[in-house]
Length: 141
Image (cartoon, rainbow, N blue to C red; front, side, top):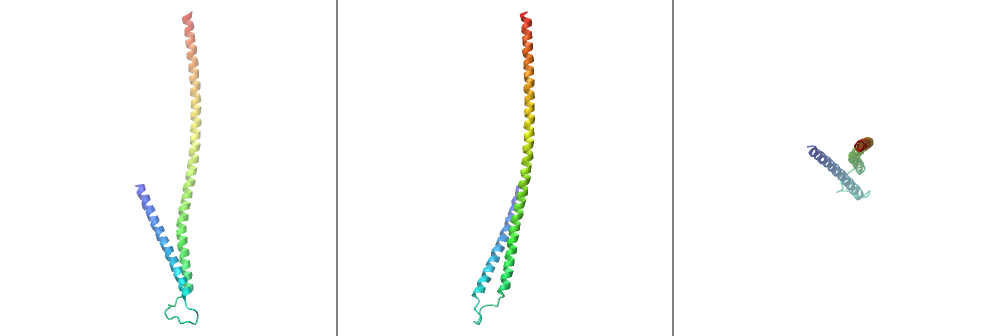
């Protein structure tokens, strides 16, 4: 269920990213069209019967502003995702560090337990050997 929710969220995010990219591309196209229209405008003193009266400077400024806004929105989404990833990686690093310390403590505990078990085994072995010797001495007498 969590995987489906994650896939839906990813799908929605990619759809919004695609929409934002499309808006940026449309803004760039408009900017280029306005720029080209400005370049095609007849020189001063020539009749401009079929050229519509367009305030290209205002359009260009508005288009640049729109493109900048769109780029900031797209970049903002990416930056937010990067910040989330960095936060997740930092928390994972902290988790791995604490787990590494826990494993080291566990290993040290097992090493101490192993040494204690070896000492106990030696003591038992030595005692059994002494009892065996004592029993042999009793039989031999």
